[in-house]
Length: 178
Image 1: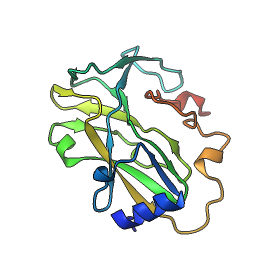
Image 2: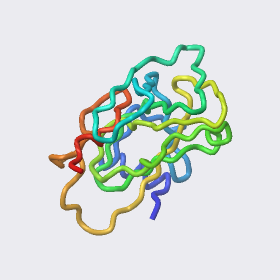
Image 3: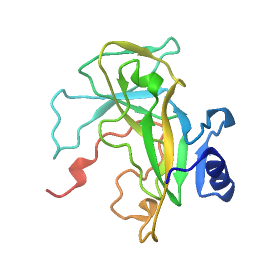
Image 4: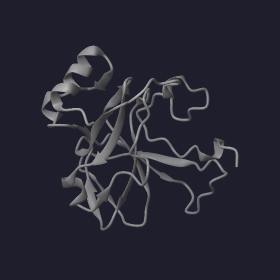
């Protein structure tokens, strides 16, 4: 079950959903619009290694925008810090973003109950497109959870993305044992 706008507001009031900053105008019928933060990053090396800690180079989007190029994986971040303590958050692209040829995540659209952070975006484009800080980039959708939670994400000892940040975070695959 997807939460409606009224239900999202009720959950914010109860403290089970936190969105900072929160703007009522960004609340849709059953989603909340999130915005592109000012920080982007790209991997330092062209070839990535799943067993290595691949370093990234951070930079800020200039006020007059930044032109994304096809064939490059950009890591972006939402302006919004979120906490979800009783629901499953899903981050999806907006249709307006998709119609510009911008994908905001390759595979990581689902958060876990207990996820408390900004969202790192895995941005790719089909053709060159200029993006701007604070532009609407995606939407959060909240699903109800059935059953009790044994371990919330923010309480997991092996959670790799718990450190609060305003910058995109690189892959932590290298921390897995394989």
